[in-house]
Image (cartoon, rainbow, N blue to C red; front, side, top):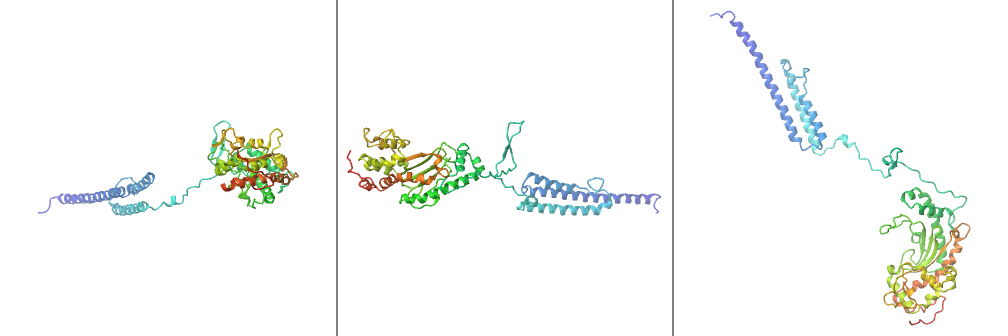
Length: 429
């Protein structure tokens, strides 16, 4: 039976309409499948790399790049999924590109998780801290000073002019005294660093003078050996760890001669160079701390009479160079020189009414003399003026070494030893 009119057209039309619907349905399924893969890729990224990111900034930057790649649309209309039938092959290509990009991002995060440094960060190096002190800059409008982080290089101060006077080994240059005067007024590290060239010149001047004096000292006292300069000269830096005075430098130069140099158990010859307070002296300082046994021997010797000790103090050379006050006896002047650390009461085992109680209270046995700065001036021949003063101290220094520093057995025959002074028998007290 022939089909009715219009029926063929209706079936054809229905098939033609139904075919595109099935194709659109397949495209929608494919798009949903791609979207599910992209969602799985996102979750996989978070699960794998949530603990591998080092910082929040790095995490956000990597995540934003991945999301941009996932949500980017190759079409110009901005729709999430293409609706055109002709774009089916392009969607397949796009899904492959997304998967490859996701794999690259995951691999890059894995490498970072394993400790691979970012090349950009690797090129960045931490700047070294500068040892230069920041300069304080004060504005006229603002009284509060602010530190400038820039480094300021200040040139070193040149040495003082010589003013026509050359440095010589047998005297002290006037510039040395000028430096010590300025150091006493500006006893600070920054000032010292700024005037380092002046310090070097002054220190060299004093060291050369000490070396010249050392050759003469070994002649007047044969017990003084030739020693290097470092064993004779004192350092200018103060030890402020246990002192209330926190000034970092000594405003003077000093040197000491003994059988072991400036340190040791033996009596010293002492040279002190300070503007207005230059001194020459010798003896033993603070015996209670350095040699308490020697102090006890010295007290027992004085208790028994101490004729040799008193004869050395009363010698004319001592009165000429050290005890020059006519109103006081040499022994009284000697006691006055050593009152700094003397006992206020009588020492243990000795009576208060002892005739030599003032000597027994002493804990230092020193003799010194203050000299004028002009003694060390050029053309004043200071070496020739200093040597006679040191020579007058030789019997005193040798006496201290033979009595105080030797063993206790030397106490019995100390007064019987001759040193140019004749002694009688030891008096009993």
